[in-house]
Amino acid sequence: MSEPVFVALLFADRVIVENNGKKGIVGTFNVFHAPVFPVVFPPWFIYAAVTNLTGKHNFALTLVHDESQQVIVPFNGEFEAPSPDVVVELAPGLMNVSFPRAGLYTLNFAVDGEALASRSLYVRQIEHPGAAPG
Image 1 (tube, rainbow, N blue to C red):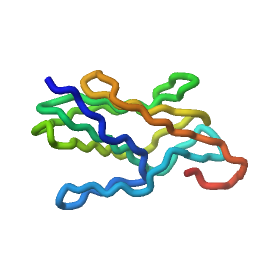
Image 2: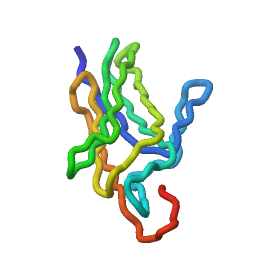
Image 3: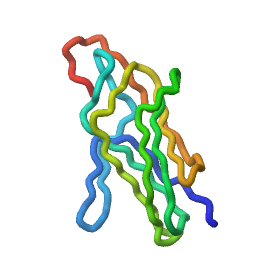
Image 4: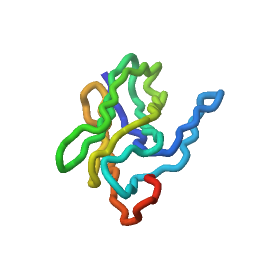
């Protein structure tokens, strides 16, 4: 069996899927700001891509608060790769994700239980009461 090859892991405001299947990734970021906690941010997306696989595979995207190890987003699923030269693109939309506290969060991307990549997301408290989260 082929080893998966990591292609991308992003946080984005939106991922648009065109009629031809192409993805438009809008507003990438790695920081959220909020005046108070816990906080729920407006809907956002994770974009993950992998290649060099064939057949059905399981994947996991897990967002964890580094200090407490609390899992904030446990997203699991399955995909089918038609051939090793195809890049499989995953773009789950996330709504109502509650962040209990400021700090460093790590997104882990795994395929068939094998860790492929991780990405940091910083959630910071701002000193502007009345400011909208984002």
